Length: 401
Image (tube, rainbow, N blue to C red; front, side, top):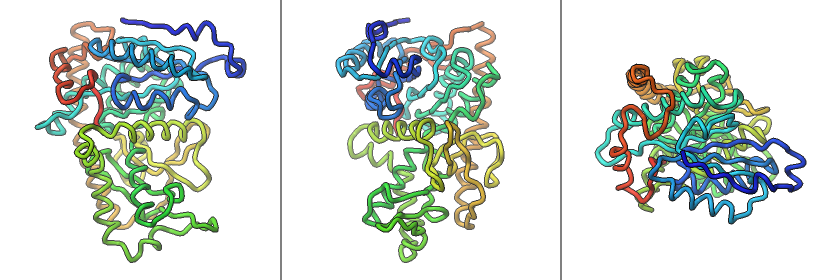
């Protein structure tokens, strides 16, 4: 354990502290990576939680603690008015203790030559440990956002493990970041129509945060014109159906790869911004009446005929810190076929991860391990982890979006 406590915690007498005596405790895994670095100012500046005081718990592997200590220095140097404390640790149980919000950014990145099943195997061990620590240590009302890929299945592994460790935390408190794909889709539609992205509403990402996802502009999407009228996108794009059912889908599906090829690194800025917007909409502002956002959530109800027991992205409304899948939308045969493709991939991922998680849990029980840690994940060794740094300058197992 490496623990730093900010002197701010003992001396803060700002007006916000008199309004909110209990800071919101936010834990971030992979905090020293590119996405974490871009996300931290959004968490501490008031952009998401307004004037609510924030206590940060930054979780990393030992190799990244030096870099993380530098990040902590910068956070203090920014003198964010909402920041009350910064804790840096290598122990998930300390990072997650009584946490209100947990953002799981750290994971094993996909490397050249890796198949998706290899990525699932590498990450299942990590997220089994993360879920176990969440179940043991986090607040019962904790909200968890999984950013690291494969995000949907990592989320499923973590929530299943958390629920098996504790019945205090419901599956509804977890989501995976399909909001990034949602924003990418809005941006593409806005460019095509020549309008501001904030006029484009109710595009939907269905399914997996992968190249099988279905970016859907036609089922429920609309654009708000200068007079405030809501014009369905299926009308605005009636003469552009070839683009919206082919190129548009492909562009959004492959956007992460395209960005990485262009800048030589992951899409950290947009991933951080999408994480911030997801948290803000889910937990603070909610959605406006009639509007939806895309969230990858645990499907326990079989929404839209999708099989239960997987984390699947749906159109969601948010109210009072909770999400609700918007039901009753009429899906075209084309849309239904797309949903079946991404559902099939997620079922395969679930089955693979389920077996790996069982093996991991059995090994953990045989060794009586009680302190899950990124550095002691059963199928990971320190040397294997360090290999991930050769592809980038990041010392953590960072997610590539």
